[in-house]
Amino acid sequence: MMAETPMLELRDAARYFDVSRPALQRLIANEGKRILRAVDGVSLSVPKGTTLSLVGESGCGKSTVARLAVGLYRPSAGQVMFDGRDLAEARAASDQRRRMQMIFQDPYASLNPRWRVRDIIAEPIRAFGLLPNRAAEEARVAELLTQVGLSPLDGHKFPHEFSGGQRQRISIARALSSNPEFLVCDEPTSALDVSVQAQILNLMKELQSRMGLTYLFISHNLAVVRQVSDRIGVMYLGRIAELAPAESLFRRPRHPYTRALMEAIPDLDMTGRTRIPVGGEVPSPITPPTGCAFHPRCPLAGPRCKAERPELKPAGDAMVACHAVEEGRDAA
Image (cartoon, rainbow, N blue to C red):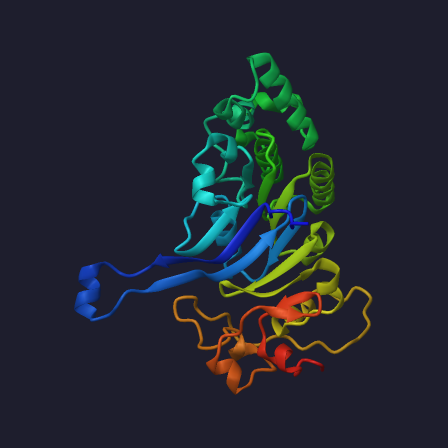
């Protein structure tokens, strides 16, 4: 029996940005180009109907992966596949573009301030010709507003009349309006009040269960990630450090960086256990360290870590890019 084609697959995908100074200034200063390696060789897959979450510090490349996944960025190297087809080829057909949508992180920048909310939410419906008439469109918009906890009457308002959390709900409603199969969620609850975060997450889980949605979920909040994820990928400086089932990752994190992230979670039970905070600063993606990018901050770093970049390899039910784990030096 053949394995089902994943909804999204990245094959050694990379995205680089040229952040060099103008050519004349570089010529005068006798300096070369400066290339920012936002994503530097990421391989992952998201099976249909599941949720893969990406976590990591700011600047690690999570949002760039999200933009690669929906075609807002083209990969500088490697390949992005959507349901078994190259993403660029898939996006060339409107019926394929309808199948993917994105919820952006900043609700203040992602909504057109000159449009009423009803027109913002209805835009994908009109673009893809999903409903036959205006009455059906208005009914669908009202339904979507209700689903995300707003009133159908809010469709007559403009975005500036809403709080940040309400704007993000509008963004979620817009993303759902084209009946997508794959949603990229770039920190969709970060702008919401704590009291309504659970409502939105429960809504997304319910929609996933009912409609068979597939999610790529980006978040800094490990509690949120644990609640919604089937698998979790931990990113560091443009690469995947660890990829594991959600509960396995929380029960036994393998990579030293994953352990450092877990140490940052507040100890609500006040067990008094000793914490070892990770030291140092995140290196620049323009001039990353040699070998393993985490080695300047890693308590398990050895000579091999400084010279050789680790690749993702199986470690139990996880995939880990760490020489210490491979050599069994992580037992402590």
